[in-house]
Amino acid sequence: MTSSPDRPPRRVVVVGNGMAATRLVEELVARRATDSMRITVLGDEPRPPYNRILLSAVLEGTHRPEALTLRDPEWYAEHGIDLRPGARVLEIERELKDVMLVDGTIIEYDALVLATGSIPTLPPIRGLVRMDGSLHEAVHAFRSLADCERLLRAVEPAAAGRRAVVVGGGLLGLQVARALGARGVATEIVEGGDHLLHQQLGPAAGQILRRDLVRLGVEVYTGARAVRMSDVDGRVALRLDTGPVLETDLVVLTAGGRPSTALARRAGLAVRRGVVVDDRLASVTDPDVHAIGDCAEHAGRVTGFVPPAWEQAGVLAGILCDEPVKYDGSRVVARLRATGLDVAVLGDPEREAAAGGQVVEMSNPVRGSHRRLVVRDGRIVAGALVGDLHRVGLITQHYDRQTVLGPSEPGDLLLAERAAAPVRLPDEAEICTCAGVTAGAIRACSSVDDARETTRATTGCGGCAPTVRQLVAERSRLTPEGVG
Image (cartoon, rainbow, N blue to C red; front, side, top):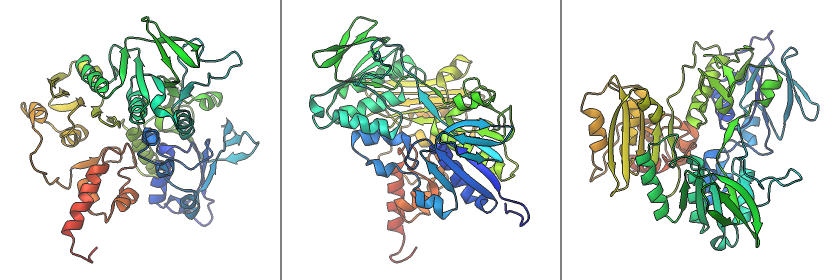
């Protein structure tokens, strides 16, 4: 798509500078859209975009904060993109087709993209908020790098003597709990559901996950809600509605979040849970306003995961470049990134099972594994794997491609034992589910850094990093010295 000499560049303004917004800009650059567009990115945080999925790795100490940066300011400048970190949007004027920043700056647009993400919500715990409206100093959110750095300051240097309670037993809560435990902090999890990851897993899988956490030194309270905080002898006491009182130094909130839609609401856009968009990811109220990522609602669903946000970014880039594409929804694959815990969830297994899907299930509590596939018309429509992920790549391929399986194949996928010797992955095997990268694409790269730059593998949840290193090393062994 190139700009006509007598036609001004199309003004594209992106509100948000997270992972969805970054992927959108990358996709536009890959299409050479900067030849015909003037792209402005407005980021609320005063730093370059970074990988939020790996915040728990920073907390654990396995990654440095700077390693999370997705694109540095020089990259934006090199491609002629106006990146404005620390630029908060106050209002959208749809009739005038401009946005106003809090400092009064007006930026006009032809196409506006909302990628504002989600914001945490406070649970109803008395004492969480002080009389002056501020959070109790022992309470920590965990949504941003600034949150992570504040929590690190509270933990260090005497981590081994500290105690923490994580409120929320979802994916983020488990990652934070394991990261704190790895630093020597005595950690407990409070989860209101009957079992951990209750929105993704059934009771049997949740029980195995709980046992693994206890084995790793994390205490778990399920079916319990924190209702009151109070100060006791230099610590805080957190009372649960089931009776126990947990004394702790830190309370980390990971339960509860909602799409950030205040800006869209004030602009008069249709909002339910998220900004309501059509198959072109355009607001059903205004075709010149688009939404992607956590803040978008398509076909009555919001996602909250990175792979769908990246898929939406790729589709929207095509739409902005006048390609004949549309968004028809995403198949979600979520991986738990936590040391000593292996969990992968495909789609919504609980909902699909309740809707009449055929369930193929295998549980081995002794080994600590539980595997479940939900099949409809021979196709895998959802799944959950706990404790044994050695076939997750193949299962994910069948799920993504909607392969029609034979009657025995779903069971065979769960029964297959771990190979005694390494097996060469076929080129078409998907390695990075976040970015949809195959083994063949990785083999074409000269190094891990090259793979990260050219395919975006390892820039999502990071779960594919060991396999990427293995494939790059395999290529190095097969490539003659001095060649390629």
